[in-house]
Image (spheres, rainbow, N blue to C red):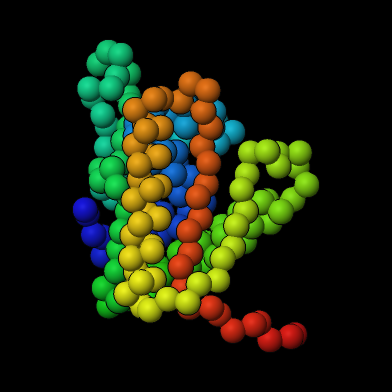
Length: 187
């Protein structure tokens, strides 16, 4: 597993389009810029630009074995398990606090977007599952639960990568295991 501590990497993945590119590569294993562009609804040159930016920071690389020929550029994550960083290590780097602030703001907005879309009346109710549970756990049990859920998600991710994109679409699985937060104060 690659552990990143460069604040520039955090800024690169904070960009919403680049973050979605990474999510598509995580789901598919590898993909062409044109495939990613189609999934995101952006022009292919824009997807290519974001892929090159991610490659510049060592997050994605070309997957020459997946191409049809030498000119066919297929991309994959450098680490197929995703991108990881330790917040404390990132904050200790010059520019780390500012980069983390940008990343955090965009991650919170993305989480809000996912929840709002999940509860929106879009006619896609049969394609989504919304669950919330409250459990009494020790910190060790909470960590074990997170690891077990992660293992299940990885199993499905690996099966999807092996089966390919035909007849499939990318789903977002947003997992949060934390002590129950205090209620938000009224404005």
